[in-house]
Length: 230
Image 1: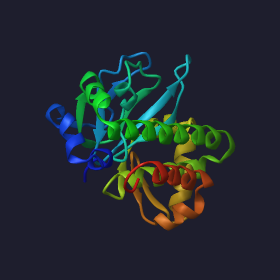
Image 2 (image 1 turned 45 degrees about the vertical axis):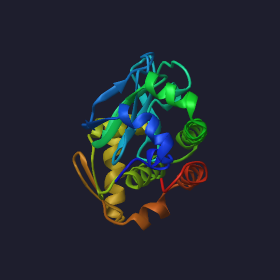
Image 3 (image 1 turned 90 degrees about the vertical axis):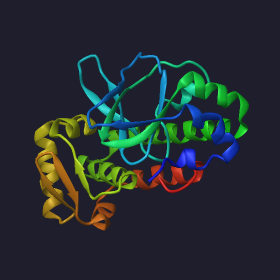
Image 4 (image 1 turned 90 degrees about the horizontal axis):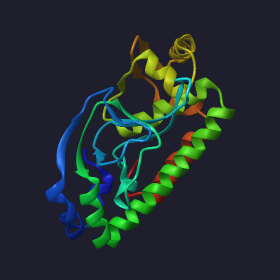
């Protein structure tokens, strides 16, 4: 698998950044940015998910958006220096490439195609985030869990997702006991198989039937704005 943003660049535009791209393997749980960190590096995942978490002073956190092979983490730093607004943490292991933000900015200045992709990606990510706000406020934990599993499944090449109970609770903004109850309910309905820290997607169609409208809204936003499948 490859990153779809990079794959969409014409050879002459890709050539502006290719010499500066470095391969990277991102293990689960790796912290990439915290709020206030200067974004010096931009990451292009190939087969995994990076979670963008909004943090509260109390230490509570909730996921606001995810980045997979359809996009890049820190891409707005291609326009001008940026500080992270979120905690960015690797949700599922992924290979990918990275580039210095300053080097990407130089290419952004020279390439209309890169500028277009950066703009489109920013709009898609904003759409994802604002839909997540509505979803977290209005929809059940079960529907949100299904949405998250489907979004994750779109970005990885396996039906098995290894995650800690703590991370799932943070991602959904609920207690760990609630995560366990919802996961068991989905297992009883035949949608998943749940073991402590591991979710196997057994019936994707069942998840699609149980999720809320937000999954489709977010997916269509990415399909409209970005190249390739999400």
